Image (tube, rainbow, N blue to C red; front, top):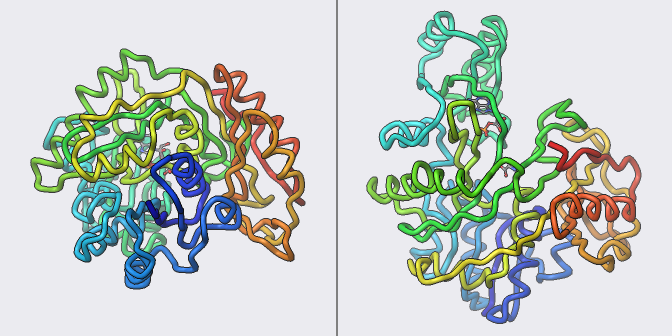
Length: 419
Ligand code: AMP
Ligand code: GLY
């Protein structure tokens, strides 16, 4: 099979890496990809939002199967467009990807089908939202309705902060049109974890759990980032919790979407919080997580291509998805200054040594090739995944890899997995 993967981050590198192990896959293309992905896949210089060009490419190259990694094209309807051309594609249609595209939609869905989540109200009027927060309690969580690169969520500790936050989202439109509507939510406390799952419209198969570190600095200090590291499994997600989530969250979500005439085929990412009152859904995403994918896929024993095909065909119930009983940890190497301003173009050394080392996988997120050498080309540059017999061994192995690779102003957290 010839497979096209759409996206350019560490997540897409992990998807290409896993697909390259499938006996069914002969050739992988990635659009637009990055320099590291170019070691596994042939790079295609087409952006993820250039649907016409991607369709032309898939037709002219006779691509058998396309995998969409990123949220923007999914929410924008890339799967509907591919299907209309008779092309096989993995990912939800726009009417199902809306669980990520609109927080108001996903909250209403959860309320209607009794899926446990934080209490909330939705407003499209600034004045009414303001009235509401003046009567409410604190902290309170403000969420811009639409996609905002994971940045449209503000946790406000008092009325002053909430008034300022409301203005930022709804009046100043810091997150653009996604701030036309706002979800105002009860503040929850507890451990957060991520569970990704394969879905074929009716059957859902959860993957092994993971945990993300979103803040830039050790001890969860500093600004929120796209993710500074992950580990799998979560230390708090027990088999009992998994069973309970299957009954109260995972299957009900897939059933709800089917009932609403929005069958979900692809990956549902459940952002969960274990609160004193039980598990709550914090958010849904309609795709693999980044960098969760970099710790989850290395533990997958089953052929990923076979699972993707089963999701599209609606035969996921026929597949036995198996996992290694191991631990994994991924430490992100970022450019100093990220998530604010940083410099690109620094030479990266030690990649070969890290790639050759046992139980270490190097996933590229923001790299480029310059005069035959890898250079930094983004905020998050690399993700170094360590595999171990358990989590602690995985963490030690990942940090061994971190020491092997270097570039100017390399920044990473030293406490990944210590949570
Ligand atoms: P989201 O984009 O919805 O995942 O929100 C981003 C982050 O904000 C989450 O990962 C949580 O850490 C935090 N968050 C979101 N909603 C809540 C909530 N209701 N209570 C406490 N923290 C929240
Ligand atoms: N790591 C969180 C996300 O992919 O949204």
